Length: 357
Length: 210
Image (cartoon, rainbow over all chains, first blue to last red; front, side, top):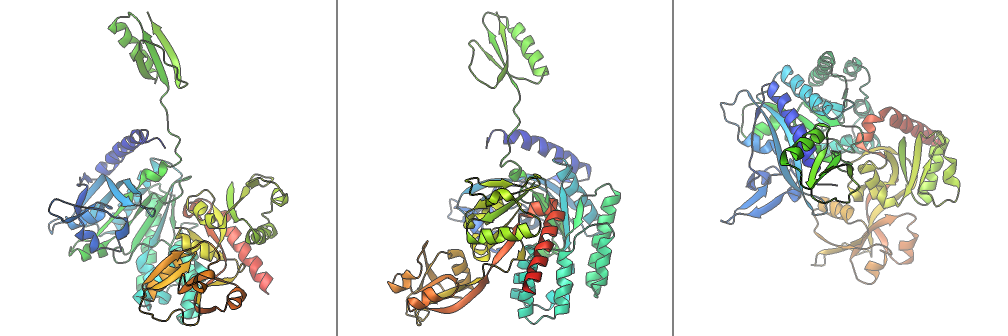
C-alpha cells in the first residue's frame, strides 16, 4: 500500500466532511495526541489497555498516545456545555494484536446534550451522509441496548452472564446463546423471544413494529417504537440504507439506547460505529446526555489500488521560462501531473512527452 | 460472487457434501486438481480450500464471505466474525488432560502445554489460576509424560490416545464442532443469500437427525 497516496484521498474526504458537519452546527474540536494514561486505566472496557501505546514523560509520568477521541472530549465537557456539537479529524494510535503500532485516522461527531429524538435522527442522518460520500450503497445497522436489556431472558442475568450473553448476541451466535441460557435455566419461551429479536431482519419499514407483539414490557416497547420512528424519519429524509439489527451491541458501561454501525461494499469490516453514550457521561460525573459516532476510513485503503494522476514530461533545452510555464499550464489543465526536466526519463507511467527547443 | 472458504481435509469434504446437498455444488472440486479456487458453472459462488486454522482469518478479512471452521480454531483465532450455525459435525471436546494429580497445587505455577494458548489462558483466567503456557504444535500428549508440563489443553475425540498413555481428562472446557461463520460486512450486503444458506443447512441438519 502506497503511503503517499492516502493523504490525497484523506484530505479531500476530511474537507467534505468538515463542510457537512459545519452545515449542521458542529464546530471543529482539536485534540492533542497524548495525555496521562490514568484516564484509560479507569476505562478498561472502553479501550483494551493492551492496545494502548504508552511512554513516560520527563517526570516519569505514564502517558498514552491517544487510542480514542470520545473519552478525551467527554472528560473536557463543562457543566455549562448544554448544547455542545463538535466534530473532529484526528489520528489515534493503537497496538495491534501482533504488537505493531498503528496510526489510525478517526473522524466523527459528538452531540453533547443531545437528548431528544431529533438528536438521534440528526446523528444517524450525518452518519449516512458520511458514508454516502464514499459509496451510495453503504449500509447502517441500528440496534437498541435498552431493548435487549429489557428482554426477560437478559434482564435477570448476573453481570458476568450478561457479558457472555452479549458476546453471543454480538456474533449472531443463536445456537450457543440458546444453550448458554438454557444452562442458566432461562425458560424456552424467553429464549425464543430473544432469538427472534436478534434474528430479526430489518426488511420493510413497518417490520420493526411487528416486534412489539413479542415484547411485553414498557421499556422494550418504547425502545422498539423509537427505533421504528427513527427508521421512518430517516426514510422520509431520503435515507433508506438503514436496517434495524438488534445484534448490534456496544459496551453497556458506556452506551445505552440507540447504537449503530456502518458498512461499505467491498470493505471487510465496519467503518463507522456510534450510539448514545449517556452512561459514559455519567461515569465522568457529567449531567448531560450525549450521542455521536466515529468514522474510521483506514480500512478503505487496504487493498486500495490508488488513483494515479496521469503523468506528463516536459523536456526543455533553451526554451524561455514563459514558454515552459505556458506548456505546463496547458498540460495541468488537461489533468496531467507535470515534471519538467532537461533530459528524458525512462518511466512507464509517463503518458505524454513535450520537447521544447 | 459468494466466496466460501472450506478447511482442507476430512472436515472440508464432509462440509462440502452439505453444501452440495443444499444446492451449492461445484463439480470441479471433486477432480483431483491442484487448483485452489473452484468456481460454480453459473459463476455465482466459488469454494476455496484453505488450512483449517486459516479459515477465520480469510473470513475476518473478507477474503471469503462465509466458511466453515471448528469451534476450537474459531476461539483460538479470536476473529471478529459472525457465527451463524452449528453444523453438528466434527464433534469433539476441548479438555484439560494429564495424570490424575496433574492439576494439584505443587507450589509452582501450573505448566500447561497446548496448541491453543488463547483458549487455555482464557479458561484458567476464568478459574482464577495463574499458568505458564508452553506452546506446542503436535503430539501434545507427550508433554506431561516427559515432565515438560503438568497438564495439557487439547482436543479429545475418543480419548483412546490419552488412555493408551495413562493420561485422563481432568476438566472439560467446551464442546467443539464445525461452525458456519461469516464476515460481518459480507453478511450485511449478502444477507439474503447468507440467511438462505443458513436456513437450508439448518433444515438439512435437522432432517438428518430425525
